[in-house]
Image (cartoon, rainbow, N blue to C red; front, side, top):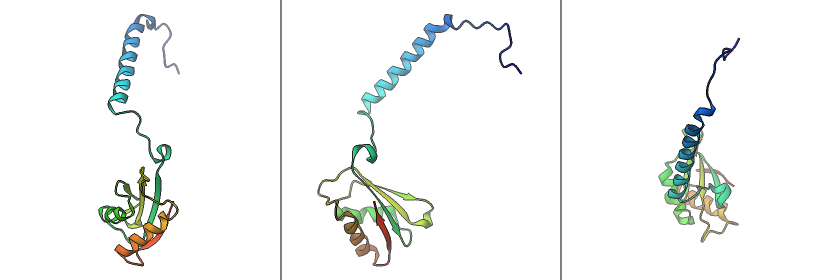
Length: 127
């Protein structure tokens, strides 16, 4: 089975200036987007910060968890629900570590969540 039939003559070299122009436009578009956005958007993995996984007994609203985490200086965190809604697993990412004692962070989060949601509501908090 032949994909390209014999005897077909495509003038690739004649179209090289069009290809150069298209490549230049794409490169310039990428460079402008890079400058306008202020550089690369690094995640917690590359920029530093923390990532905590919280397993709760029953699903909670993300906004309620955010309010509780404000007391632990994690107000500018990204909170994401993992898995199904019934799994009640949440991932907390924060790039800012100012005013946070990373040594006691897990216990601080656990205590704050237990104080708000109840003693049996938190199953696990880990990094």
